Length: 510
Image (cartoon, rainbow, N blue to C red; front, side, top):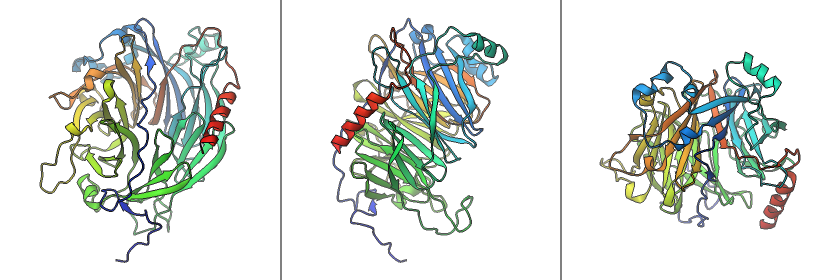
């Protein structure tokens, strides 16, 4: 077999580290997500946004009642108490949470593939705060919206009362929500969207590009072009046109320092490291064959990575790469640290890092069988391989949420984790999950549930409520709404000053 030509001195470095003599420079530690402080005597409002195969964009407001917030989240409901979800009875009637439709419309002309929410704008006296929403679809369009970061008024207007009387669920519209426009700089299906900060939107597409858009004027600043892999045979089930092959960016992950980015693409057995300051490719890290074989990506599998995220463990940065049925965790030396799944019987969909008190982290993974699995990738919890043919260590399964025990049998296509902190400084999370069964579920999880104990894979979490969308959910995001300050009013142009100053600081840094 002819040797593949190398594009540069760093091209084709092995991800195992054998050929990776040049290590990336150490970056700043991964920043912890914003913690929202909650009170046990005040309700918590959560804005949920979900896209579907059926082109429908759902905006859902979940009001968690104080009685549910004050209750202990470490206790798990008995199996018979979760039987109500199997019968289809609305979980919101239990009194833990109340759901209402904020908006509901056909946002695109074909299925919605991804959604992303920006951090809220900085507080300004006399003005309300905003959150940007971006939605991507197979119609090659990116729609952008302005969402109010504050809960809508609970005083229903005459129109809302009329709508609520003829709809199966209450309607709670927010006057601060509006559409901004559509971005058309991609020529194929949109696969991923992300706001690394308030001033930039990154978008990936099946046209093998990652675009960087400035949110102040929605100008396309740069487009990272990933190579299109050469066609080698025709994989079974491939939907590419005749004469073409699989191509496109599956996912990307921006380091919290906003200096480097990792991306994974279709038809490739590697990941690419990009320098966001220069806009150029830094390295290509190949996956080794034996590592792919151990995680179920053997000879007859695609071998391509589908998800990639940054995280941290033991005070050091790491990143996780998700495949069809397993995931690999790498250190900053680009060596595989461990694998996650104890077996490859179920598919995985999304991944997310959770940071606990004291800096300890766990990696959450959603699966095809309706569970979210929590793994510890700390050095003391990584197990050496027990079989002779195995070379990869395994992370410890700390706990699991959902599954058949909790009455969830369908896939969890997407989920989001919302960290909160109570008045005593105790950290907990609201977890929002959704899947192809059309049900959006809201869970509560405490820090004590994820502590490493002798019991591995214990059932954790408490289901607060279920919302039936009647659509096949493909993507989801959410944020905890901020109480409106006294005297704050909605302003149409409240973004401009802040984003302009952020862009100026970015340009000075470059």
